[in-house]
Image (cartoon, rainbow over all chains, first blue to last red; front, top):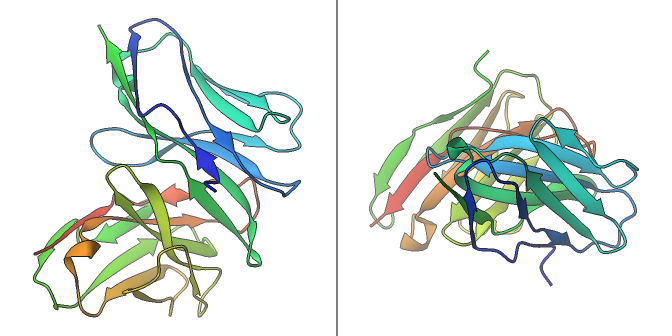
Length: 116
Length: 114
């Protein structure tokens, strides 16, 4: 079974609108971390936001927020007031303890296109 | 502060040739990782290291070897390249194995094997 599932291969959003990118995860650990990364067409991986499994409040970083629903095992990324520069691939990832160390497992990504 | 750097940025190999990808970080991080990214597959972990002199296998280790002789460097080797190893390779590092620490990524190396 996939540990991280991103069901939206591609999404479109109008500039200045909000958009939600879906992510569900699968783990039996109580302690884990959830991350979102952005990959623009230039190729680099840019860290956006982190949510710990024990964090009671949803994480926020500027225009990014993480809608964390632990019982449903979902960690959706919400981008408010979309900008043209938000067009990119977005990857959800989970960090959990595996084999004695902490490893990051990535989803397959969602390609977001912002329309002017 | 350069962060994580990768050498080279691009490389074309013929089947059967060998090469080494170099990753260097100047943040004194303990953990280092090598990933490959293929279209539609996200990033998959090849090998990782939890400290100088240590290495361990990730999800897709076959056909690759690694070494971590110095804390700041993590080398990825392909002894006999195959077309299936055509991919973009990313190196990453993190301060330790804590759940909350993000991984810092290098710019990537685009490798084509013909």
